[in-house]
Each structure stands twice: as C-alpha cells, then as structure tokens.
Length: 282
Ligand code: GLU
Image (cartoon, rainbow, N blue to C red; front, side, top):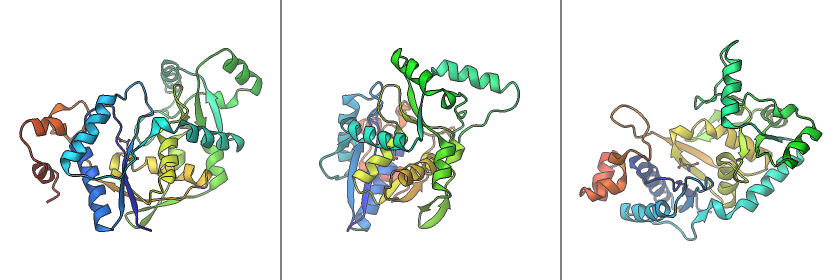
C-alpha cells in the first residue's frame, strides 16, 4: 500500500508562505515515496470559514504546481462521523457537557490565579478551570433542557488512566505523548458536533492517512490526537512536524498578514519557483 499524505488547511483566510511550505513538503514526500496526496478542507468553524477562501485554496495550490486526489474531503460534510465518535466516547463515560461562556471561564481562571498560578496548556491557554464534570446527571439534564448551549469535553484524567502511557513516531523515532498537559479539551464545540482535535483524528483514519506532515505549532497537539486514536481504536499515522515560517518579528505567520499571502506574492509578480526559493526548498 502506498503511503497517504494530506494537506489540511482551514478556509478562514488566504494561504500564506507557511501553508506553502507544508503543502510542498507533503507533495514532495508523497512524490519521493510513491505515495498519494490528499487535500482536506477543515471547515468545522462555520462562523470563520468562507467559500471564497476555499476557492482561493484550490487556486493557490494549483498555481504552486500541486496535484491532489479528488474528491476533496470537507469536514462540514462529515458531522455524522464526529457524532458517532462522540457517542462511543460517551458510552465509555469519558465526555461531559460544560456550559460556561468564554467570559465565565476567564473569570474562573482569574479567581483561581489569586491563590497560585493556574496551569496552562502547551499553547499557553489556561486549562479548563470549571467543575462541570461534577454536575449531577439531574443538574446536567436540567441545564440541557433549559436550552443552555454547551461544549463536550474529554475527561482527561479518566481517559489517560484508561489508556496508560502512549508514544508517537516523530520522524522515525518514538516520542512520549503527554495528553494530560492539555486538561479537559473540547471535543464538540457549542456550535458544531466536533472540534479540531476530534475531527482531525476521525478524518485521518477515514482517509487512511499514514503520514501527517504539518507545522511544529501542532507538535504538542499530537499527544491529544494519539490519545483519541487509542480510545477510538484508530491506527496511528507517522508524524513529521516541520519548521515554521516566521515574520520579521519572529512571530508565527497569521492569515491576516498580507505580505506573506501567496496571492499577494503572485500579484506582485512572484513565480512558484520564487516561492520555493524563499522557503529554502531549492
Ligand atoms: N487545519 C489545520 C491548520 O490549518 C491543520 C491541521 C493538521 O494538519 O492537523 O493549521
């Protein structure tokens, strides 16, 4: 079986040099290994994703010279699969609803930080500080019946206890996973029956992805992905996290930075081979 690679952008802005690096590395590894290259549109967040950004992704990738298989998988067309995974995790007693708003969560963190620093996840965000896990079934049922919006969270302590130590293959060597560092992550958003972590794991398995090539900003998230793969009996791909392209101030590129958008470069006359040079690929 040939290896299967995927590039998985979110259509919430225009692709920039960092995306180009990821896409070109995926394409190069697929080519060198006689593998397949898939494209996945990560559009769970309906409030931020727009059709014109999706159209621009196809256009920019084709301009770069990429070829990918059809059909393209769009996360928004697979909500049933995410629901099925949530049902399985629920049957294991590993998820619970949490009802707090962002502002309430910020206030809880501030209150906890009056006594001692509150732990943060590898991305620097405070761990979930609430106690929704301890609500009684009756309290949960009452809140849900009242129409209060809720997210579904993973009971991380219980999940880690169930699975035990985990590793992943990073560039061919074993790396110890530490999912507990993320706390009770969200697996279904208030507005969608899934979250990035859940969808990426379900999708990679559904597509038969064998090799995940993506930026180093997602290195630590792999711990959560390995845990979910293990809970859901899904195969573990090999991982290759690559360097990030930084802006002049040393910050990660964002979709709002015009100067590094591929279409801006193209509009100012850059060729695909100029892009490869800027990325240090030639
Ligand atoms: N959609 C994610 C992004 O645009 C990438 C997800 C992944 O490669 O796992 O950053």
